[in-house]
Length: 369
Image (cartoon, rainbow, N blue to C red):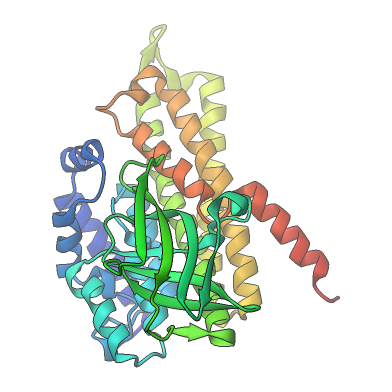
């Protein structure tokens, strides 16, 4: 499909219309209340071709650039779409770009065409947790080590594993049924994104890695940078949705004979929510516009900046929205607390604002003048 702004706008509009029509509040609350992975919903999205949006056309994808996924993930955030959207849309696109590995193509096409779950085992999801998250090493006896936090680990049919190999990285695609893979489910802040602890005991022993050395280092950098950017976009959608809900609510809620939106303190809070949401939206739009022409280093820097601001701004908007709604915002029947839980979970994924500010400062100071 030719990449044109009109095509991107049409794509985002079509996705938004589908979610509005087929993923309404009642269905969303039912899925949120049940938790875990909804296999039927995942299969529906695969049938619609969503997981192949950024997959190259030669691999039967639609061939959109990764930057076109920004508005898509903002839409996901607004509708609080459950499931492994990040893994299902990003990983096949990055791994199949420039690759003609037949076995890899067949495995990833199960995700694209059928909605089979692809999980990412990356000890680098956050440096702050590194002592707890563990590490994975590619040895002559296969993959060895543990990653303590992986989304959708227990539901995965395959893992994309980021491991150490000497001084470089190695990237492997591992069958979840490999006898050297052990998964233990653990609690998650977001009930629609279950976590698991994954241990590798000689897994992938007789299969060559997808990439090692410089090629793997580039893949890892791309995965982490685009993950941060797309998470920032999803957090933007969450902030937009809760801002809209809050503006609507404070105009309706009456107290002391007047709408609470007429009170000065409430006006100031809503204004702060609007400022944070607008700034976040503009930052993500600028980052996506600059991404195609960015070097690997610049993309990593931009992604860290966007994710750092999103982690803080979206969470503040969620907290203000809960404050505006009072106790009703915490009830099961109202969606606000589900958005808050999603924002809490995404805040830490690939670095919160504190960790990323520290990383941005270190790389900026280390850069040559």
